Amino acid sequence: MSQINLPFEVGHTIEARSFELGFRGAWFRCKITKIFNKGRALFYDLEYLDFTDEGIHTTKVFQKRQGENEKFLMVRPTREEALVVVVHGLWKVGDLVDWWKDDCFWCGTVREVREEDETVKIELLPEPYGEGKSYDALFKDLRPSLEWSLEDGWIVPFSKDGEKRQCAKLINLPNEEDQVKGAEETREEEKLRSAKKLVGDEGLVLNIMESESIEAAVMDLEEQVVRIEWIKGMLSLNSENSTWIYEDYPPPSS
Image (tube, rainbow, N blue to C red):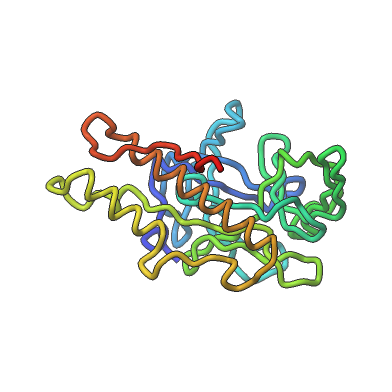
Protein backbone atom coordinates (compact mmCIF):
# COMPACT_ATOMS: atom_id res chain seq x y z
CA MET A 1 0.00 0.00 0.00
CA SER A 2 1.34 3.46 -0.94
CA GLN A 3 1.12 6.88 0.67
CA ILE A 4 -1.73 7.81 -1.68
CA ASN A 5 -3.99 5.47 0.29
CA LEU A 6 -3.18 7.06 3.67
CA PRO A 7 -4.65 10.27 5.15
CA PHE A 8 -1.39 11.44 6.75
CA GLU A 9 0.70 14.43 5.67
CA VAL A 10 3.86 16.18 6.81
CA GLY A 11 3.04 18.20 9.92
CA HIS A 12 0.27 15.87 11.11
CA THR A 13 0.26 14.66 14.71
CA ILE A 14 -0.27 10.90 14.81
CA GLU A 15 0.28 7.89 17.05
CA ALA A 16 2.97 5.33 16.20
CA ARG A 17 3.86 1.91 17.57
CA SER A 18 6.87 -0.39 17.51
CA PHE A 19 7.60 -4.11 17.47
CA GLU A 20 10.84 -3.51 19.36
CA LEU A 21 11.20 -5.60 22.53
CA GLY A 22 10.21 -3.55 25.57
CA PHE A 23 7.86 -1.27 23.61
CA ARG A 24 5.42 -3.75 22.07
CA GLY A 25 1.78 -2.81 22.56
CA ALA A 26 2.49 0.88 23.22
CA TRP A 27 1.40 3.91 21.17
CA PHE A 28 3.52 7.09 21.06
CA ARG A 29 2.44 10.61 20.11
CA CYS A 30 4.46 11.79 17.09
CA LYS A 31 4.66 14.48 14.45
CA ILE A 32 5.44 13.61 10.83
CA THR A 33 8.42 15.62 9.58
CA LYS A 34 9.09 13.79 6.30
CA ILE A 35 7.44 11.22 4.01
CA PHE A 36 9.56 9.28 1.53
CA ASN A 37 10.07 5.94 -0.21
CA LYS A 38 13.03 3.58 -0.30
CA GLY A 39 12.46 1.20 -3.13
CA ARG A 40 8.87 0.02 -2.73
CA ALA A 41 8.74 0.68 1.02
CA LEU A 42 7.13 3.76 2.58
CA PHE A 43 8.85 5.58 5.45
CA TYR A 44 7.99 8.43 7.83
CA ASP A 45 10.45 10.57 9.76
CA LEU A 46 8.81 11.05 13.16
CA GLU A 47 9.40 13.49 15.99
CA TYR A 48 8.34 11.91 19.29
CA LEU A 49 6.44 14.69 21.07
CA ASP A 50 6.86 13.29 24.59
CA PHE A 51 10.52 12.32 24.11
CA THR A 52 12.06 15.56 22.89
CA ASP A 53 15.65 14.36 23.47
CA GLU A 54 15.24 11.38 21.15
CA GLY A 55 15.60 13.30 17.90
CA ILE A 56 13.99 12.18 14.63
CA HIS A 57 13.16 8.49 14.17
CA THR A 58 12.70 6.92 10.74
CA THR A 59 9.82 4.42 10.78
CA LYS A 60 8.78 1.93 8.13
CA VAL A 61 5.05 2.50 7.81
CA PHE A 62 4.13 -1.14 7.10
CA GLN A 63 6.00 -3.82 9.03
CA LYS A 64 5.92 -7.57 9.71
CA ARG A 65 6.35 -9.18 13.09
CA GLN A 66 9.20 -11.65 13.31
CA GLY A 67 8.10 -15.00 11.91
CA GLU A 68 4.88 -13.62 10.38
CA ASN A 69 3.94 -12.74 6.81
CA GLU A 70 1.13 -10.27 7.56
CA LYS A 71 1.98 -6.59 7.25
CA PHE A 72 0.75 -4.17 9.92
CA LEU A 73 0.18 -0.42 9.68
CA MET A 74 2.44 1.14 12.33
CA VAL A 75 0.72 4.54 12.54
CA ARG A 76 -2.78 5.85 13.14
CA PRO A 77 -4.45 9.26 13.60
CA THR A 78 -4.85 10.87 16.98
CA ARG A 79 -8.45 10.58 18.07
CA GLU A 80 -8.94 13.73 20.14
CA GLU A 81 -9.86 16.02 17.22
CA ALA A 82 -12.32 13.70 15.50
CA LEU A 83 -14.10 11.86 18.30
CA VAL A 84 -15.84 12.18 21.60
CA VAL A 85 -15.60 8.94 23.58
CA VAL A 86 -18.34 8.37 26.16
CA VAL A 87 -17.42 5.74 28.76
CA HIS A 88 -20.10 3.37 30.09
CA GLY A 89 -19.87 4.05 33.83
CA LEU A 90 -17.04 2.54 35.87
CA TRP A 91 -14.40 0.26 34.40
CA LYS A 92 -15.25 -3.44 34.46
CA VAL A 93 -13.21 -6.63 34.34
CA GLY A 94 -12.56 -7.44 30.68
CA ASP A 95 -12.57 -3.85 29.44
CA LEU A 96 -9.91 -3.09 26.84
CA VAL A 97 -8.04 0.07 27.83
CA ASP A 98 -5.05 2.24 27.01
CA TRP A 99 -2.91 3.07 30.05
CA TRP A 100 -0.96 6.34 30.08
CA LYS A 101 2.39 5.38 31.60
CA ASP A 102 5.93 6.61 30.90
CA ASP A 103 4.66 9.14 28.33
CA CYS A 104 2.89 6.67 26.06
CA PHE A 105 -0.31 4.59 25.92
CA TRP A 106 -0.03 0.86 26.72
CA CYS A 107 -2.82 -1.42 25.48
CA GLY A 108 -4.18 -3.96 27.93
CA THR A 109 -7.15 -5.60 29.63
CA VAL A 110 -8.68 -4.77 33.02
CA ARG A 111 -8.35 -7.83 35.28
CA GLU A 112 -9.42 -6.35 38.62
CA VAL A 113 -11.33 -3.21 39.66
CA ARG A 114 -10.87 -1.54 43.05
CA GLU A 115 -13.48 1.20 43.38
CA GLU A 116 -12.41 2.22 46.90
CA ASP A 117 -9.10 3.70 45.72
CA GLU A 118 -10.04 4.12 42.02
CA THR A 119 -7.43 1.71 40.72
CA VAL A 120 -7.40 -1.35 38.49
CA LYS A 121 -5.04 -4.20 37.76
CA ILE A 122 -4.25 -4.12 34.06
CA GLU A 123 -2.68 -6.91 32.03
CA LEU A 124 -0.75 -5.72 28.99
CA LEU A 125 -1.19 -7.43 25.64
CA PRO A 126 0.36 -10.92 25.63
CA GLU A 127 3.58 -11.61 23.78
CA PRO A 128 4.41 -11.17 20.94
CA TYR A 129 1.74 -8.44 20.60
CA GLY A 130 2.71 -6.73 23.87
CA GLU A 131 4.94 -7.14 26.89
CA GLY A 132 2.46 -9.38 28.75
CA LYS A 133 2.97 -8.04 32.28
CA SER A 134 0.46 -6.89 34.92
CA TYR A 135 0.45 -3.52 36.70
CA ASP A 136 -1.69 -1.39 39.00
CA ALA A 137 -3.14 1.69 37.31
CA LEU A 138 -5.28 4.66 38.34
CA PHE A 139 -8.71 5.23 36.80
CA LYS A 140 -7.60 8.68 35.65
CA ASP A 141 -4.75 7.23 33.58
CA LEU A 142 -7.03 5.01 31.49
CA ARG A 143 -8.92 5.56 28.29
CA PRO A 144 -10.95 3.03 26.26
CA SER A 145 -8.93 1.19 23.64
CA LEU A 146 -10.00 1.93 20.09
CA GLU A 147 -9.02 0.27 16.84
CA TRP A 148 -8.43 2.21 13.61
CA SER A 149 -8.32 1.06 10.00
CA LEU A 150 -8.56 2.73 6.61
CA GLU A 151 -11.74 0.80 5.86
CA ASP A 152 -13.69 1.35 9.09
CA GLY A 153 -12.05 4.33 10.80
CA TRP A 154 -12.31 4.25 14.62
CA ILE A 155 -14.27 1.44 16.29
CA VAL A 156 -14.69 0.25 19.89
CA PRO A 157 -13.57 -3.40 20.28
CA PHE A 158 -15.64 -5.80 22.37
CA SER A 159 -14.54 -6.62 25.91
CA LYS A 160 -12.75 -9.85 26.80
CA ASP A 161 -14.94 -10.96 29.68
CA GLY A 162 -16.94 -13.52 27.72
CA GLU A 163 -19.72 -11.02 26.97
CA LYS A 164 -20.34 -9.10 23.76
CA ARG A 165 -19.98 -5.75 25.49
CA GLN A 166 -18.28 -2.45 24.66
CA CYS A 167 -16.95 -0.19 27.42
CA ALA A 168 -17.56 3.03 25.46
CA LYS A 169 -19.42 4.62 22.59
CA LEU A 170 -18.11 6.97 19.91
CA ILE A 171 -19.63 10.25 18.79
CA ASN A 172 -18.13 11.48 15.52
CA LEU A 173 -17.84 15.27 15.34
CA PRO A 174 -17.97 17.09 12.00
CA ASN A 175 -14.61 18.40 10.87
CA GLU A 176 -13.81 21.88 9.66
CA GLU A 177 -14.06 20.96 5.98
CA ASP A 178 -17.59 19.67 6.49
CA GLN A 179 -18.58 22.85 8.31
CA VAL A 180 -17.25 25.33 5.74
CA LYS A 181 -18.19 24.60 2.10
CA GLY A 182 -17.79 28.12 0.78
CA ALA A 183 -17.08 31.66 1.86
CA GLU A 184 -20.53 32.74 0.70
CA GLU A 185 -22.26 30.68 3.40
CA THR A 186 -23.14 32.49 6.58
CA ARG A 187 -21.87 31.28 9.95
CA GLU A 188 -25.44 30.69 11.11
CA GLU A 189 -26.02 28.32 8.18
CA GLU A 190 -22.81 26.48 9.01
CA LYS A 191 -23.90 26.03 12.61
CA LEU A 192 -27.31 24.68 11.62
CA ARG A 193 -25.79 22.23 9.13
CA SER A 194 -23.09 21.06 11.55
CA ALA A 195 -25.58 20.62 14.38
CA LYS A 196 -27.79 18.54 12.09
CA LYS A 197 -24.83 16.34 11.15
CA LEU A 198 -23.88 15.86 14.80
CA VAL A 199 -27.37 14.47 15.53
CA GLY A 200 -27.56 12.59 12.24
CA ASP A 201 -29.69 12.85 9.14
CA GLU A 202 -31.97 10.06 10.33
CA GLY A 203 -32.80 11.64 13.67
CA LEU A 204 -31.57 11.08 17.18
CA VAL A 205 -31.06 7.42 18.04
CA LEU A 206 -31.20 6.63 21.76
CA ASN A 207 -29.72 3.65 23.55
CA ILE A 208 -32.97 3.35 25.51
CA MET A 209 -34.67 2.36 22.25
CA GLU A 210 -32.68 -0.88 22.28
CA SER A 211 -32.48 -1.50 26.01
CA GLU A 212 -34.61 -0.32 28.93
CA SER A 213 -31.73 -0.70 31.40
CA ILE A 214 -30.56 2.08 33.71
CA GLU A 215 -27.15 1.91 32.03
CA ALA A 216 -28.71 2.74 28.64
CA ALA A 217 -30.57 5.73 30.12
CA VAL A 218 -27.41 7.06 31.78
CA MET A 219 -25.54 6.60 28.50
CA ASP A 220 -28.18 8.69 26.68
CA LEU A 221 -27.83 11.50 29.23
CA GLU A 222 -24.03 11.49 28.90
CA GLU A 223 -24.27 11.70 25.11
CA GLN A 224 -26.70 14.63 25.30
CA VAL A 225 -24.32 16.47 27.63
CA VAL A 226 -21.55 16.01 25.05
CA ARG A 227 -23.80 17.32 22.27
CA ILE A 228 -24.87 20.36 24.31
CA GLU A 229 -21.28 21.25 25.20
CA TRP A 230 -20.29 20.97 21.54
CA ILE A 231 -23.17 23.22 20.43
CA LYS A 232 -22.29 25.76 23.13
CA GLY A 233 -18.75 25.83 21.78
CA MET A 234 -20.01 26.36 18.22
CA LEU A 235 -22.22 29.27 19.30
CA SER A 236 -19.32 30.96 21.08
CA LEU A 237 -17.13 31.02 17.95
CA ASN A 238 -18.73 34.20 16.67
CA SER A 239 -20.81 35.39 19.59
CA GLU A 240 -20.61 39.12 18.67
CA ASN A 241 -22.36 38.68 15.32
CA SER A 242 -24.44 35.61 16.04
CA THR A 243 -28.20 35.78 16.50
CA TRP A 244 -28.00 32.60 18.60
CA ILE A 245 -27.78 32.80 22.37
CA TYR A 246 -27.31 29.86 24.72
CA GLU A 247 -28.88 30.15 28.16
CA ASP A 248 -29.14 27.56 30.92
CA TYR A 249 -32.81 26.81 31.55
CA PRO A 250 -33.53 25.83 35.13
CA PRO A 251 -36.61 23.63 35.67
CA PRO A 252 -39.63 25.52 37.06
CA SER A 253 -40.05 25.34 40.81
CA SER A 254 -43.02 23.33 42.00
